[in-house]
Length: 236
Length: 178
Ligand code: SF4
Ligand code: FES
Ligand code: FES
Image 1 (cartoon, rainbow over the protein chains, first blue to last red):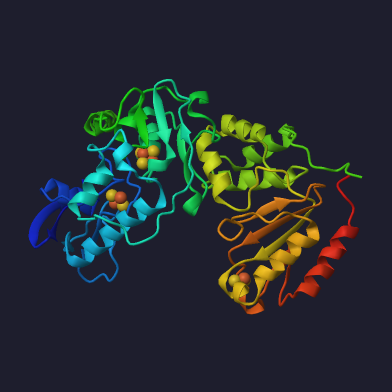
Image 2: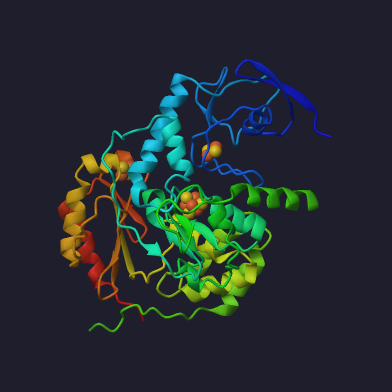
């Protein structure tokens, strides 16, 4: 049986089970660490870098979602330095693709937008990349708009780990990375897709959406998928 | 005399692929080795979609994962490759030693059109006759020899336009694919 350890989070002593990540310990103790790629019930990806925290005695910042809590660790979840880094991470996401909230079906229900507002990102300091990216409308019920994707890989992980279909993955590299269905084919042609819609439910932005919604109309239920994941975890 | 243009054939040597898969399944990181061996075995040194689908079916690795690996590593190609490969380093050291001019020289001499975004994206173009594929990399790790050019898997250091043209000229004498 894994042993109990204590760690300090923002000065408060917290009990944790060995093997838990800093993120999980913080969450269990009522601390909110900003995140975009983390999802309860699926493996961590560490791709968004919003959950960076300071650990006493470690120079660099560590992602809370992939760093295991260790006995005696002292973690700081918010500071000027962290806010600076988190804002930078968000700015770079906004710069990289075309996040035009005013014409987005997820406007008002978008995790990227909400985080930007809570961290006070009201403008970006870098020129926009403005790439010309396609919108895949080939699926009968859903749409993938690459312009809004932040490559968090939540869709990839829920499809693989919960639905077991593994339709999605990330193709390419660096700034050329894209979410791809199978061999980068139209979503509607995918043989593996079961049309379950889990990827659509967990996408933090307006990249994966259901057809038939207008601006601001698309809402989702991330927690429903998380509950499924928990059940699956308990069953196996 | 354009007989040897690599065709986008979907054919592959199924028996060979089977042996490679059998040798490697179960080993960690097997996919990389499988893809590499299979690509080497293909006449035009690339991975047609049919072979990717076959590997996916045989190994139960999801297609999208295979596609992700193939497009992540510069080593793999989804397009037929030329018989000769010329690779010009566009890393920082080579850049400061004039590798952009070398790239331009190579493009001109091979009769390849300049891409608009040649600076940003890694380049990989094949001449229309399928004779030569020209590529760029971000650093060979041989910065002391900058500018570095690799021709058919041989590294040439301290290249200048003249020595590059000489190497390219030597290529042209080579026979095309049988
Ligand atoms: S489509 Fe959505 S869930 Fe998938 S990687 Fe992009 S932002 Fe994340
Ligand atoms: S939540 Fe940890 S890196 Fe995204
Ligand atoms: S920059 Fe060319 S070898 Fe390093």
